[in-house]
Length: 125
Image (cartoon, rainbow, N blue to C red; front, side):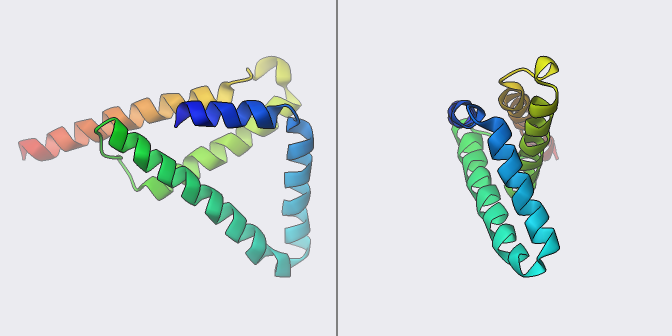
């Protein structure tokens, strides 16, 4: 999952500022025009579903159980990616190119370790 995420980021980052402007304009348009919100909500939900599916595959490939529902973990990854994209545009000098991907990789490793710890505790009960 991490390498796919990295490839997607490198492609998106070629036009990060424009991408972020468009995304922000869509949010603002949706807030000003509530009839559009269901469409934006659906798009966000589909993105989180794709992330959740990738996370589930990643946990399976690592022979680990997620420490929380993958839908919740996907929401965290999605929000982290959005926030770090903003930081990259506002402060590129202090936001490395792969900051979001490296953060997700760190989270995945932590979540795998936590999932294994929880499984071990359940096995000892």
